[in-house]
Image (cartoon, rainbow over all chains, first blue to last red; front, side):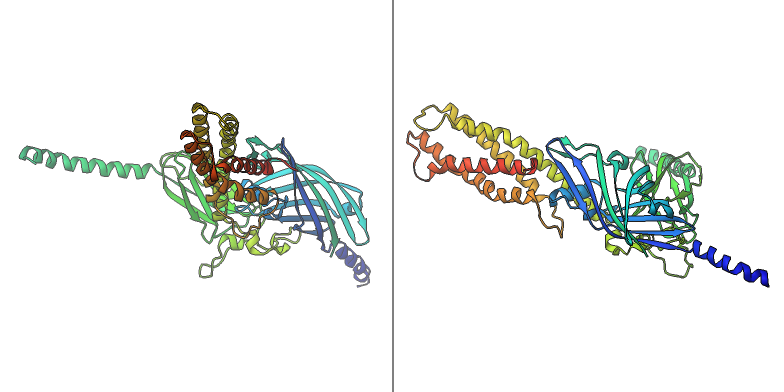
Length: 178
Length: 306
C-alpha cells in the first residue's frame, strides 16, 4: 500500500506531461509572390485558421486557408488565380506539419510540411522558420518555396507571356497556447 | 420486295440474329469487373464516397458510391486502361489500372487523409461525402481536422459548377485579350493612313486603304468586345484594381468605335463628292483619336503596373 502511495505522485506527474496541449493560430498573413516579365504581383490572405494538438511532447499542426481569400488588389486577377488553381473545385489550401513541442522555445525551426492545394499534395523538407516568443504568443515567419509544377498548375500568362514557375509564399503567423 | 429477296432474308436473318446475340454475349463475358475498398490513411472504411472510373482511351467516366462497407464495384467494363479516382476537398486520389478481358481485379484506394470511420448502419441516414469528409472531426487527439478550424461549410465544399463557370470565363477572356492585341495592329495602321487623307488630298487610293483598315479594326474590335461582354459574370465579385479603369475605358472606346465609322462614312462621301469635309463629319478625326487613345489606355492598364 505504501509503495502504491509513493508511486502516485509520479503517476500524476507523468500523466500531466503526457496530457494534450493545444495551439491556436491567432493571426496570420500569407503572401504569394508572382513574377511576370511585365510586373510583379503579390496576393495576401489574412483568413488562415490553424490548430496544433500536442501529445507526449509531439505536436501536429494544421493550417488551412480558403483559396478565394487571397487578394492581389485586382479582382480580375484574383478570379483568374482561383480558376487556374482550381479553387472552386478545391477551395482550401491545407498545410500539415509535425513538430516537437520543445521547438516552440527555439529561435529557428526546420519543419517538414505537407501542402494540399489545387487537388495535389506536395511535401517540402526542412523548411526554415524563425520563431519569436513574446509573452503568451509565438510569432513564426518564413518563406515556403513552392512552384506551380509542384501542384500541376499551368502557368497563367498575360500578353502571351507566362508567369515564372516559382511562387514563394511568405508566412507570418502568431500562435498562442490554449 | 420480290420472292427471291424475301427467301434470302428469311434464311440469312436468323443466322445473323444468332451471330449478333452470340457476339453480344461473348462481349459481355469478355468485359471486366473492377472492385475494391476505399479507406483513409488509418484504415477506416469510407462509405458514401463517390468513386470515378475513367476509361483513358475513350474519356468516358462511370461514377459509383462506396457502400456501407466502403466497397465499390463496377462491372461490364471494356478491356483497356482506366483511372480510378476519389475526390475530396483536400485533393484527389487517383490510381491507374489496366483491365484485361474477363478480369476481375480488386483495387483498394487508400486516401492520404485520416478520417474517422464513417460507416453507418444500413438503416441509418447516409451523409453525402462532401458533407461528411472534409469536415470530419479529429480521428485522433493528435490530428487536427478541417472541422476543428471552424470554417463555414460553404467555404470548404467543392463546387464543380463554379469551377466550370470560371473555366469558361477565363477561356473567353483569353480570347478577348488576344483579339484585343490583334486589333491594335490595324488600329494603328488606320491612324497612320489617316495622315495622308485629310486636307486637300484628292487621291482615293489612300482613302480606300484607310477605309479598309478601319473596317477591319471595327470587325476585330466587335469580336474582342463580344468575348468580354459574353464572358460569365461571377456572382458576389466586387470589381477592384486596374480592371476598373480597363472597364471604364470601354465606355469611351465602345461608343467611339460605333461613332467613328459613321462619321468616317459621312466624311468619305463628302470627299468623294469633291467637297471639303464639313458639318458633323469633321468630328471623325477627333473622335477616332479619343477612341484609339481610350483603347490603348485600356490595354496598358491591365498590362503594366503603374
